Every structure is written in C-alpha cells, then in structure tokens.
Image (cartoon, helix red, strand yellow):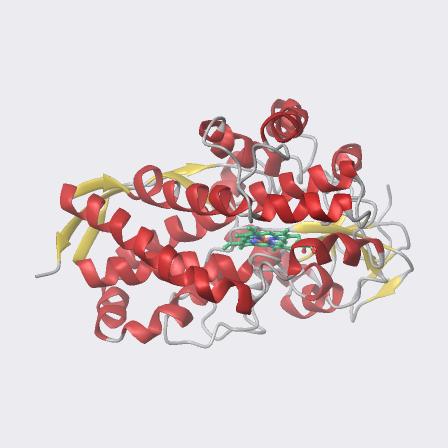
Length: 394
Ligand code: HEM
C-alpha cells in the first residue's frame, strides 16, 4: 500500500515493548503529523487530540459499521453489534439498555455499590498486604456488572480471561489476537447457555434485553450480542482503571495525601487517571470519503486508528501532559470515547471507581506498591498484578 498523503512509520505499535510503554511511540507519532500511516498494520493512526475528537464527533465520515478492529479479518466477529454499527441501526441497539444506564436509573444503585466497595476494601486493608489487581480491582467490577446483567454465579470464573482476550481482537492479527480468536465464539456460547431467559435475575439488564427481543425491537441474535457486549465491556476497562489509579497514587504519595485531605477530589482524580492511563488505548473507524487534515490526507475506504491513549497525552491539549495531577481539569478526555459511541457504561464505571477510591481514602493512610506486572493486550492497557502494602488510617 502506498502512503502519498501522510507521513508513515514502520513501527509496530503492538510489540511487547511498545505495549509495555507506548508513550514515547505516541509522542513520536504526534510529532510526525495529525495522521500517520502505520505500514505494518495498513491503517492510519490519529495520534493527536483534535483529530481524534473530530473523528468521534463525525460518525458519518468516520464509520464504525465495518468494524472497530484494525484488522479487517476480525470484522465479522462484531458485525452489527452496538459498537460496530452506525445510526440508525446503532441507535436501536443502544436504546435497549440506555435507560437502565442513565444517571436517574443509576442513582438508586449507588448506596449498594458503595457499601460493597467499602466491605471489600475493609477486608483487604485488614490483611495489610494484598494484590491490588487480583484482590481488589478484578473482584469488584466482575461482581457488580454480572449482578446487574443478572447472570448466574456459574461460569463467572471465566469472565476475566474471556473479557480480556476478546479485547485482543480489536488490534492487528498478531499472535496475541490469533491466540484469542476462539474466545469470541466461546463467549457467545456462554451467553447462549447461561444468560437464558429463565436463568437471568428478574428486573436485571438481561431481563430488559429479553423484553426488547419479545417486543421485536431487536432480534434474538442482536440481543445475545448486546448481553455479551455489556458483560465484557464493563470488566477489563474498569478493572484497569482501578488498578492504574492505585499504581499512580503509589508513585505520587503527595497526590494520595491531597485526596485524603479533600475527598471531593475523587471525581477529578478518577478523570485524571483515565486521561493518563486510558484503559482503552484505541478503536478504529473506516473513512467514508477522502479526509483532509492540516498536514495529511486519508483516502476514502482507509481504516483509521483513533489513539485515545495518545490524544489524552497530547501536549497541544494538556499542559504538562505526562504529569499525574488530580487537581487539573481532565474533563474532555477521550478515554470513554465521545459522540454516538461514547461509552454507554461511563456513569456506572464512575460510581464503581469513586466507591473504591473513596473507601481506600477513608481506610488507608498511606501505601506502597511493589513492581507491577503488566497484562499486555492489543486494545486495553492494564496490570496483571500489583503487590500492595498499606498503613491503615487511624
Ligand atoms: C473505566 C471504564 C470504562 C472505559 C474506560 C470504557 C471505555 C469505552 C470506550 C473508549 C468506548 C467507545 C467505543 C468507540 O469509540 O467505538 C466504550 C463504549 C462502550 N462501553 Fe465502555 N468503558 C468503560 C466501562 C464500561 C462499563 C462499566 C460498561 C457497561 C456495563 C461499558 C459498556 C460500553 C458499551 C456497551 C459501549 C459501546 C457503546 C456504543 O458503541 O454505542 N463500558 N467504552
């Protein structure tokens, strides 16, 4: 493929070293141009904030309908799902659970989520030392989301691995993705077997999906995919955000002291975590017409990778972009995307994360973390383990 209209690079954004620390590669891409052709992957990356935001706000030009993976061979897996569709089809799918995830519907759930977070935090803090990923970050979203969707306990032990591996399929067709290929069908089979009408909790999100099937709003196939998407989209994303929050605070104890001194900073602090260590590093779009940026052109039909993780560190948008500062105004970040596909679960994710961070701030005076272990993935950025030792609050 030729790249007459944009700078190009032979960099592999998905090798182990780059996934471990992508930020120098992102800075290089941002310096190269507003769109940069990735020769190895056959897609154009948008590494800067302004262009990512523009693309997210213009679904007619930057379409999700073909798929949001950078490897077209994975498109068929998600074809026609809420994440891989355009309006009007997209809006019908999105409408099914929209009310259940709206602020008004979430408000009554807050007290229960906070109580669960507090109990979990109290339990790990009492141990003194724990793994902030395995014992805390992973435990919480799995139970919260699975309970809301209403699936039975049986089979939940496989969620973490499945959710994580499904995200590999949004990257290139590298070994990591090919190893994960089978997990997509396995996950659908799980939903077919366990998330059935008779096994879902009454009043759950899952029950709402079946009502939409019965009302003819979505087909059975679409409904099952919705269940799978809502189950898995809310796991690694929230887990990675909570894990990174703890790691960022461990590296900057003065920020932890600031949060403890003023608990109302929990909201801005979480947005800053999402900006700095965006759980989803990027999703792709397909351009429906030639697109001109200041210094580059992307031809109709090309696939573009919207690099949320790079946009959120763009020095054109954020002063001292690499610095973790919970007092900055990080609103406007694109860690939840933006526009018609902007994260459907962001209200829930915030409630969960605020609950965990607030409980920690109340119960932990200071803490230290050992060397974290990363879990490398083609789309999501997170930790596999984070040994943590706490000094409980008096
Ligand atoms: C910190 C946690 C989370 C992060 C960072 C996150 C991130 C994202 C991002 C970046 C997108 C945009 C996709 C695109 O641009 O194509 C998205 C979409 C989505 N998210 Fe989240 N997410 C989080 C939590 C959740 C939760 C808790 C749920 C549900 C329980 C959820 C459900 C969804 C769904 C259904 C979509 C697809 C929306 C659409 O295509 O219209 N997410 N999320």
